[in-house]
Image 1 (cartoon, rainbow, N blue to C red):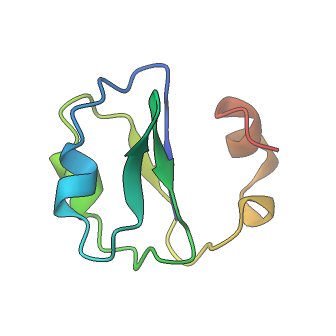
Image 2 (cartoon, one colour; image 1 turned 90 degrees about the vertical axis):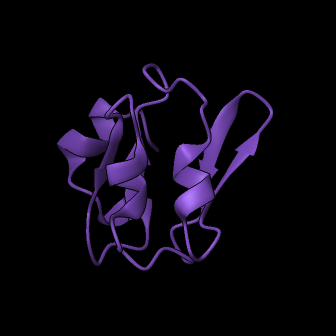
Length: 76
């Protein structure tokens, strides 16, 4: 699973353009992620010029993220 720090995202859509599973897309004013599609390849992390994507391999649900990560990224 990837998590994007939306406060620092520059909306370049580089992450979405390299994702082989279309697990990231631009919607409205931010990038949306689809953890169920993510294969943890890391291409999006490497493609991000703003360095605002963090990967958590093997996690497919926000509830599985550590509490401090959910707090940091303001996730449910």
